[in-house]
Image 1 (cartoon, rainbow, N blue to C red):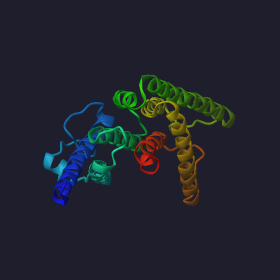
Image 2: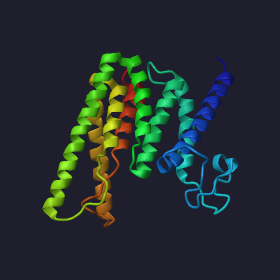
Image 3: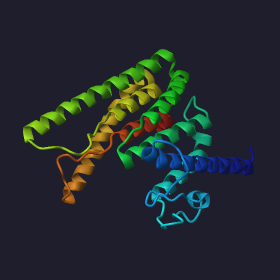
Image 4: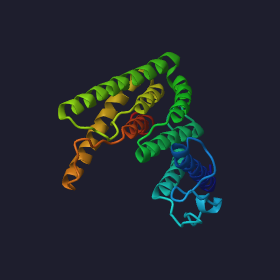
Length: 259
């Protein structure tokens, strides 16, 4: 392959990744709020975007002038770069298309959970279908199903323990805790999806890595809030991104260093 042909392929990969990122932004904008996909609308005034304003420039509402957030650029540029890099660095056993779709799914779940503290059932169902197909291809049927069951079951135990701990805290302190729990049932579903992806025994490493990442980031978040004098005993961070980051590291980054 000549250098010119290679450059063209990388550019095509970037453009497709960018367009895929635009689609993910649209889903992340509409699905959590409307629970359906319709015409993109401004979150400030609900006016419909012009396609030119929504996808290209200027990225602002034509009625109230509200700008689209930085997240739209981050997702699109990030998926564009990923589309180019995956030409050479797709995970073993996954083609370019599947690797990009899976990465887009992980990014979508992460964005929605960070912005809305929410993991939708429809995204979990879509993820389960994607992960089931990938898992069976990579690990076989039985290890994939066992991995999904272990991932779901382990996070279900954490979820039930969290409910018990919250109730005991309310009873002992005699006060209401209004913040969302750190682990919701959406995290349980997502852990099952990750289990299907990693299979058995890969899910064990995935869960351990998730707990380690969650502990480190939560500690940093806690220290930052203490330094800013914004500490509250019920502070919580969304747990879904820890699961998706763990899956990303094991599926996309680990093969680069451990063949």
